[in-house]
Image (cartoon, rainbow, N blue to C red; front, side, top):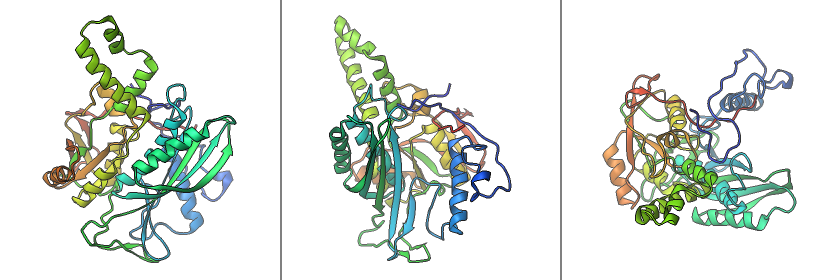
Length: 383
């Protein structure tokens, strides 16, 4: 069964559309966007072709444009910048009958800076644009944005405001890449986009056969939290009210509160991403669409196979929620030095990363415990 993304009202699962050949991406009448291409990633590919054709060039060596968690570019002085943007829409990403606009504002920031975490970077500045119906609690929404910005060490420096039929928050983040070694500097040669030694930005495409795969924490919390919210009164609360098995019920109720919090207030794993980059990790991606979907994105970008041993589900979450629920915003990390990664996390005072499998030389392999990896996870459809 395909699991919908937490809080999202749209359809879930994979969809593939026919790829037309020989169309001019600059000609509206012949555009594939939203017509032949009906899945999210087909639409992105078609838009990428259009944008690159309009610019007359693709990303120069060392820069990263469309296709990874964040873009890496050089400013006019040759300094590296990480750029990311994300959009949170009420009724698609957040159910405002179950969450508050404060939660929505918090989440909008966290899901954006999570893309920088996946690159091993830090957020510095945010632009926040809000569209909402009249009467929306914009002060509450702003307090959620401010809380998340403070928690992630960045500041809101601008944005836009408009009316709209539903609440929508768009966050753009500008970030940096701290040096991999003490006293080092990261530079990109201006005009050439050549990343100097020590840049070591994490990408989806750096994994190699033989690399070990880790996640930064148990999975399925957000999806399980949404399930609990939708159920209203949980079974554990009813059990506690009846006075039976009170200690076990209290523990389960505490776990439920943690799951609900994970859904309402996700946390970007910035320290984990930076630590993994400094420890020489080869690739990373954040888990927004679900482990099964996002590990495929990493494998496809890297041209490797995936052999998973197990799925670490959070307490109270099912394996399907851990595999396909999404919006956990933990990181999948590939590394050729698993012991070094674990030691680096321990030294930084972080949770020990959880080993889940390895990359293989067969680019078509996608397995879990010896069977085919299920096709679970979120995907926007546009047809």
